[in-house]
Length: 265
Length: 274
Image 1 (cartoon, chains in turn cyan, brown):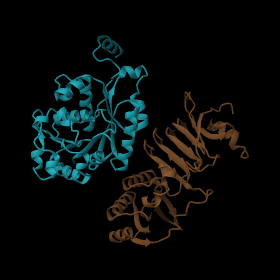
Image 2 (cartoon, helix red, strand yellow; image 1 turned 135 degrees about the vertical axis):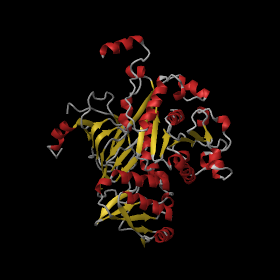
Image 3 (cartoon, helix red, strand yellow; image 1 turned 30 degrees about the vertical axis):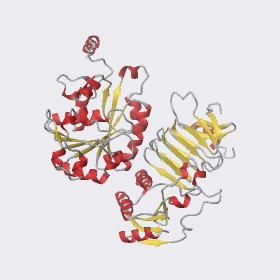
Image 4 (cartoon, helix red, strand yellow; image 1 turned 90 degrees about the vertical axis):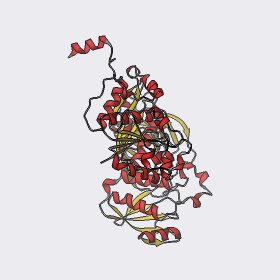
């Protein structure tokens, strides 16, 4: 049974594409057949984050226009051969495809993949409706900010009304120190409002920006950073494994706190 | 009365701004063993006077209408007996075969069956006939859609919703609204009667929207963005309580008051004359 998961948030810039790229890569690393679909027609980014921009020949629109076969448009990842990208067209708008066309694409991909991750554009207009049309699960990404949470709440309402009932929450860009100082919403505050199961928490990390610019998802690092580890854990939880949540409040590389933990146990 | 907290009054609403006409939203109503699905009237009939009514009365387009149908279905599913016949009252709304089939599929998910379509539009009647429903085409729908002219109408039966009312959702009802769940910031409840929230009330709530100052807002956890009763508007107290307990908002001597449920019951409910 192929799982069709849309990654969405409502608000822009909270990390949908970063999450899609990293989860897709992490799932592929565990030998699942994964295809990531960029549904952000006109403002595509997913190819950049995966470092696959220069290998795009055809896009999803060319497939729909029957100018190429589906497998010609799919960009296979060199690092993880089980990962493929279906790129969006950059020169068109979100109105250029319909939910029906989206389901044609997804239906054609279904038999060949275990996971189909759809990177949803920001907003709740046509692009959003295209992206959620075929999904049976959704990952809602939010940052611990009141505006992002408000938009995520609206999106969850729309997903529920559109029969996407299996929802997961990712809280991105958490700054544990700020939460402790009561200057940032905690994960609990976010969950209080959104009331959907938590899939994972990703700490704020400058390395995310570096990895984005390089086109190397964090989960590919030989020695995982905390954010990379968080993504790897989320991928595992998505597969159904029980993985305890990272303790972000403890500074991990601090010798002092390591000693303290040693004494505690 | 000492435990009363006084919310900050901010403004008065202009009369009729909160009027909930019975037809402004999708509504389910049981009548003689069948379920009526009442759609709000279509765009063209209202367009002349709708700007005066405010944006809330602006006609819905199909995606919005569809969303409302789904939300009402998701919120009330415990109360319907399987295989209940649903009669769709489409009024003057144009519906094509696909839209009718979408409605039927949504109803079928809750094990409700679409039987009959009432419409005053020929095209809708033709579409309904094509799709195989029995139709009743009428020029006047007087017995099903009482015209909202008199101000003092009897309230509709309460609307009961079991779900989280999320940001961007507005629930309007010409009667009392009961929500079993939270209402989140960014949501709005507008009721001609009382509002009960068995959960956290964090959005905007407007009770007695047709002007009844005796209406009340009750919540287990009253943490609203804004409270409105009849023509009064107030912000919640600046210092939120340390621990929330069930509270009641009502109009007292100096505008909207908030009392704990226990105090309210002691002062008001045992002396109905007050």
